[in-house]
Image (cartoon, rainbow, N blue to C red; front, top):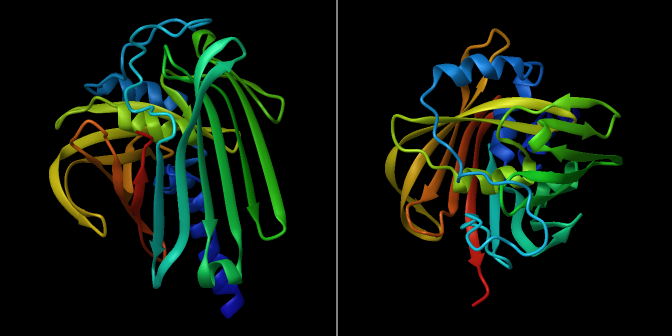
Length: 290
């Protein structure tokens, strides 16, 4: 009985651990069967905000003003994940590793890593690593991969994205059509920070994870003062919602993201309701090269 409960609990932890898009995963996990065609209807019904104006794929020298203002090379953010009765169930690190020429495209290389710790790790160790290369001109990913290990099971996915052709090639050999503003787990973290939304407006994004597309609605709910272990911050509260199988908007997991109102646009807190307990992902440390 205890073992069965632990296995069930780990399914939730595993979902949250996958990246800083952890809570996005919670939102999308029960909705993975909803296909991207549903996003079109929702997208047309919303007053959508936009990401920084996209350009064309950039080769050679980077444009003078690529618009990637939250991409700061060397910036590192560390988070603790608390869940149900576990004070700290996992740790997550997000980092803008470098800016480099990748496949002749000037790009940001970003990485998100997570690892269960403490009792949760002893019962069922899980770890995840997500990496992406993001075009500095369009701020869209063009290459991404992720590794997930749960216990003795290991899974790896690669994605080759061609946003200008609205096409992606997946690990399982499929070629799919990309909706506008499609991100993998790692690049989604930065896309949410770059998103230009104000109260009363929303944006439609899509997340590519585990060879599946999940549409997502991001709504700005308003400013809020938030206190964490790191202090008190003025933030904008964003609601991350999904689509139910019938095409409606679902807020079942009540995923909320709090981003600081200053120029750093730091995601300092994620909260969500899970099947067997609430989840809180809190920023514990931040560093940036001088």
